[in-house]
Image (cartoon, rainbow, N blue to C red; front, side, top):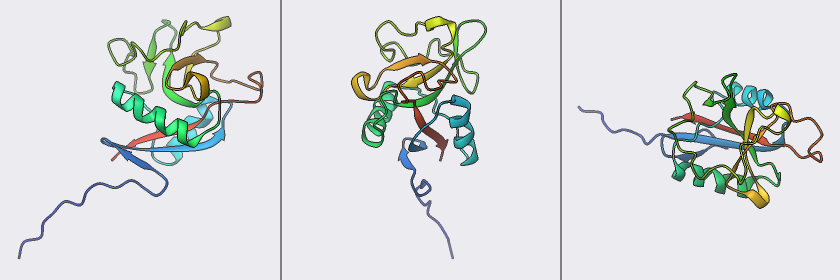
Length: 152
C-alpha cells in the first residue's frame, strides 16, 4: 500500500495565502510599530518583508480592502543607526524591491524621528512612507494597522 499526496499548504483561519506566505491584517490602529510586531509574533508571524513589486501590489490590495486608515499598515522595514533601511530579518533594503515603492519625497526622516515604515492606505495607497516608530496621537488619531506575514 502506498500513501501519497501532498496537501496544498493552507493558511490559518483569517489569514490569506499569497505565494509562499500567509498574510493577516487587523483593522486596529496601532501607535507603536513594536506593538504591531509583537501581535504578529504572538500569531507565529512577523511584519511583512516585501521582496517584489508583485507582492507589494498584493499587499496594496489587502490594505485597500481591509482598512480605512490613511496611514495604511506597518511593514517590517526599519532605519538603523547607519541611516540605511533594513528588513526585520536584517536584510538591507538596498538592492531589494523599493525603487518605485516610496511616496514622493520619501523617505525624508521628518524631524529625525521617522525610523519605521508604513505602507500607505487612502490617497497614497501602494506607496511607502518613513514614519515615527511610536506615532502617538499627533497623526489626527489615525495610525497604521497590524499587517503580518508568515511562511507556509
